[in-house]
Length: 102
Image (tube, rainbow, N blue to C red; front, side):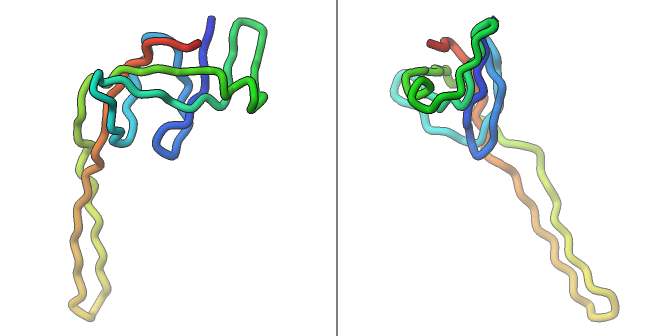
C-alpha cells in the first residue's frame, strides 16, 4: 500500500490514491488540479523521509468543490460592565480527491 503525508493548509494529512480530503481554500489551475508537498512517503516496507528524495515525489489532487465550514460563534462577556461582543466565523474550504502519487 502506498500512502503519503502531505502539507496542506498549515496541517498535515495522510493521503493515498482516491482519498477525499477537506483543506483550507486552495486555488487550482485551469484544469482543476493541484500539487501537494510530500513530507513522508510509505511504499510497502520502504519509508522515505529524505528531503532530496521527497522533492521528486509528486502528489496530485483534483478539486471536487469549494465549500464553507460550520459557523463558529465567538462571544465575549464581562460581568457588571455591560460589555458584550458577539462575532461569527465560517472557514472557506476546498474538497479535493488525490489522483496520483509518484
